[in-house]
Image: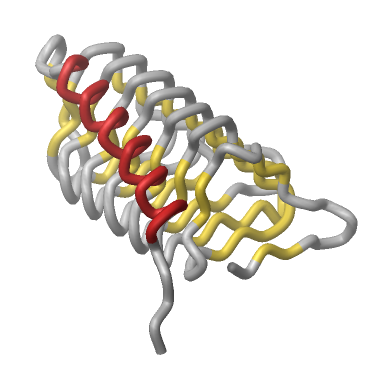
Length: 172
């Protein structure tokens, strides 16, 4: 797997985290216990830092970046779906960011909130805890998320990462 230092900043990857061989990790990226980063994902901590909490999955094709003054911070037990773009935002514990979504500068996705597939959470938007954000630009629907389902999905990805760690083998 390509893991790169940049200007002295090296990724910090917990030994229990799983990084797929086709993911790319650059610079100041911090992966917590049992976090997982899946094929084609790029985490580029070249300006500030990117922090991924415990048991959080960053799924296939997602791109996480930061700016010189805005880190990208994802809490514990989060699910970041396929082909998601996160930049300079905060995703709090137990949140889900659906496939194809974009969450931008200074946006905050609250604890247990859900960003629907293909939604765009624009700069400075706050998705309150337990809310859903849907559409382009995202419209907020309070108290519509299902934190139990998000927790179950996060647990499935922890189990999936363990399966990949022990059974994935390249055959070409």
